[in-house]
Image 1 (tube, helix red, strand yellow):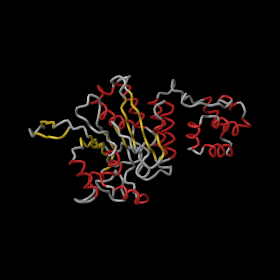
Image 2: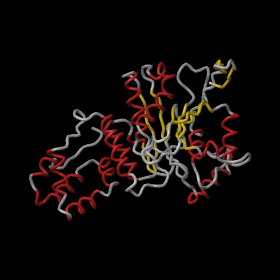
Image 3: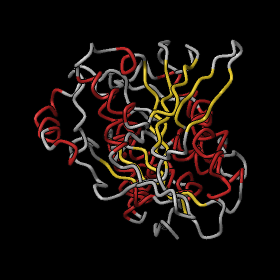
Length: 351
């Protein structure tokens, strides 16, 4: 078992003792193994119990889950749970103290990104015994990691995806960790912390990476550490340049490029890396020639890493109507592909 509970209580037993519901529920939570209990405590669960008990709502909430709400995996699929969560996000994101720039990617966008990354390589991913390594440096609630596992399993039941992630927000980290724990898929590789200043996976490289970083969030309070990393040049993660302090989006992309698995064109197994990242328009258009943004874009293009940029329709993300773009970046250089356009002009690009 990945986690367990040694308490004498179940939710059904909790319902039978209304007078002691708060104490009994606390005992039930403390009966979990440390890995599960730590996740629940990240939500400040004991304070929530006390608040609901004071408002005479705790017993009503517990009985609601016993009598009326059945979220067992046999009754509600993972996909349905995902949509339920997204609906809650859509309704309440504006009411929450959400960090500026954080926008939850809908499952359709995540599925598109996963399909673009995985489809060309499924014949290799499904090889017996092979395990693809997937990383998200701004994992959020784990939607991208979860969708990747599900999509690979749909294409081939033998496919194995090993997930890694890091998340700054303690509560969304707890959701991500609990999701991977319940599914038994690498919860010990999900880390709490700032990917820029406290990289939890400094020596790891990956076959695939996915990310939906916060849009237009400044990095001023981490400026010294990030500039120190930049001064290390290409031995560090931000050697190509620094974007303006008001928008750290391109820092995420540089961080991910630093974790690309090395490509070996002679290898018979899967090497190299493909990554997908969601941006708003700023990383694409901001910055004059010679600026940090311009130098980062130049570095990516001159190395032949940019595979494509996909413009998404507006109104896709739940709490913003801004235009978004998916960047696909890879170090798997497979020569030059020529496409004939409708006007008869040859368009050449690195594949």
